[in-house]
Length: 165
Image (cartoon, rainbow, N blue to C red; front, side, top):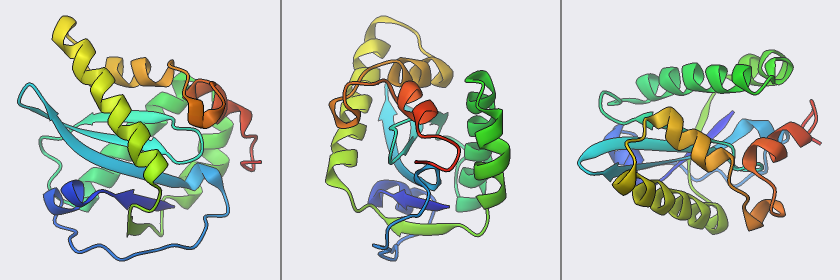
């Protein structure tokens, strides 16, 4: 599994400077991008799947190193996939590949643009509603995006098949 971190998140979890890993990932379930941001003085980490844009928003406070980041991500991803009825993908693809992990710089500007769009959407909704990280994830995962042919991230993730085809 590969995590492509923004410079801002890499500095927060003391993984700076990051190596540059350009090689393609065989299975689209195993490539994730992560960014750190604040909304109304609260810290958050946004982690998205590169192929489906499936997103997880986590509290950023307390995530001070990569191990804490990885543990929090694994727990949140497990909960999300079980809620989506994707237990088979979780057991056969995700969990066996949680190690070894590769940490790298971000490489896809389109994905970074989508992450910024997601952050703006969360920021806008947070002004009007009190959202938990789970609510933020649900909001993002139920919104269609052009990058994935106007499917929702949840629909796209489920449509990739067990092997990620």
